[in-house]
Image 1 (tube, rainbow, N blue to C red):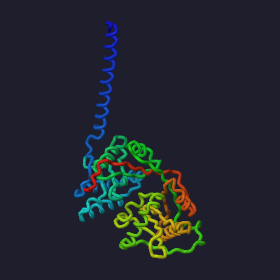
Image 2 (cartoon, rainbow, N blue to C red):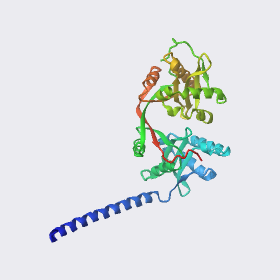
Image 3 (tube, rainbow, N blue to C red):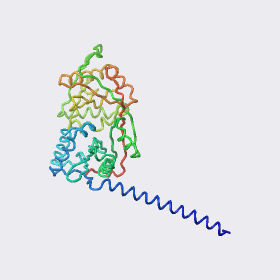
Image 4 (cartoon, rainbow, N blue to C red):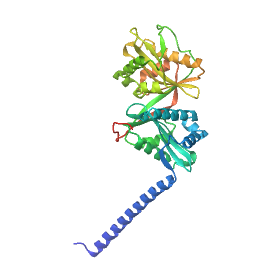
Length: 352
């Protein structure tokens, strides 16, 4: 039997509980309202490729010195993405387009996210940037989630250095994700002190983008499961597409049968540096100086053409590659890089 006093205590406890629920609901509504208020006035959407005024606004955004320092992207790089998109639209190949999301307000762009397809099912985030005056106001989050919604892909991936702590914390919160760590190495292009020629010389070839037969043979080499397991497979998944449609270049070595047995991919950056994009050597050709010869050839080639440094990024547990570049005189950098992958669930299998 419940006494009058017990009923009063119960009712009082219930009132306190109800008041707490109301307070929590009010706080949730306030937080939601605050988030909407922070984004009020912004259009978060894909850029209109037919609107030259909007495209010029994007160039103006990336010409900002703070944006260039933070992202290492230049206006010329963005112009290249736009040129590629226009070319693909012209050829009815919209499935190959870079996805460019903008945060626009009063005809001015204050934020942008760019992702590109690196194979048939996955996208790579090139950059997410927000004007300094609108940071920490959910604009970057809105750009990221807009990319997630618009991409018809199985995954979205990116690389970040641990120094980009705000970006790292945000991306890490977007679960479920996979994180792998890369070690960064650098060497002056004109430093050849670590090389010797006790191994037999190899003929090194520059890969011609019109040599489809050799490109296909290199794709076969890179599709080897053992090579994909030992190296950063992200570097190889889109080799053919990247090589034929972008600024990726390659050096390779032939065996006695004329087949490629080793390849080193790279691209030349606008800041006067060269970035390697992957090194692979067939199992039967390892420990013969092939990799080191490729690295030396690349270094001499870019030095002759006025480039000051060669950079490389290696999975932290790929000790063979790390030792190879260290033996060639590359110095490890203090910062680590996170290679991040998030699975997307809405892939239909058909890119539009």
